[in-house]
Image (cartoon, rainbow, N blue to C red; front, side):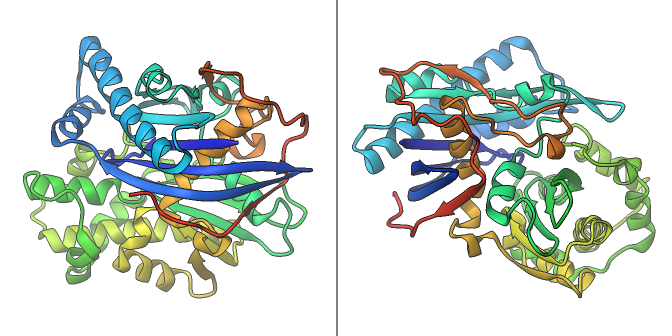
Length: 394
């Protein structure tokens, strides 16, 4: 089956998309990655998304406009990738869209909203489109996150001989933990890049949006008093499964902890980088992980990765690339996998990881030009195997 997976993450800077060929043999999914593209949002679109996110106040008409504009942008990327990788013959597109709000109250997820109208993708590609992939898990009592736990468990094994963790360092950090004689567990740890990006954008007046190569953090010194104030947030002590987002970890949250203190940019970035490393290390150690596979934009920040290794001296840390999928393509690949399973009526969530009452078939399906051929399987897969990458789309 020819499938495209798409997402714009919590950094809302680009559309990540992959094209894969999937087959299901017995209970193993085999995936062949044919293309991966990262297409930046236009400056206008990125600016408008930023003004939509909490704690900003918006209007329903702006939500409607952005739902359309983001949907059209995703549709252009999907159509281009379909032409380049499948000669226009794509069966399924699964679009996560852009998260604009994740409603959590008293430790429970009550709703989640991703925008980017999928009908534009269906019109542009003719494919069956799977969207709104988080809401079903929330309706089943889960957090709708981290959905990456599906792919993590299939790659790492549900019950490996040692305790393994799959760490994602996006705007928010999350982890999946698997091990012998235990159910898999997953949860959002806290801010990975979210506060660092917010600080850079604020202090540079929008000229910069992230700390390139962690250079600013590398020059600075950690402010222990400020770090302790951040670490005192009750979210970190809450039990898993749990989820969070930029509804909590945003610029106003950052400013509220500074309390009129004058702090050099480099020192602030060093402190925020250390916050990410410490909270991740605490989660890894609390769950006894001895082998960690990382992915996400944070892996391209050498200062952060060095801090993680310093905080986790007894843990082997490598990239998820070891399993055959480039770390930069992991999230989009996850949604391609979810779309593949959804059109077959197979479960795409792991209840012990999201906190749901049961696993569920995910997403809302927009019919394409033709029915998707069933593979006549009624059992969810237990393994995911990546064949060798053949080429990149450009």
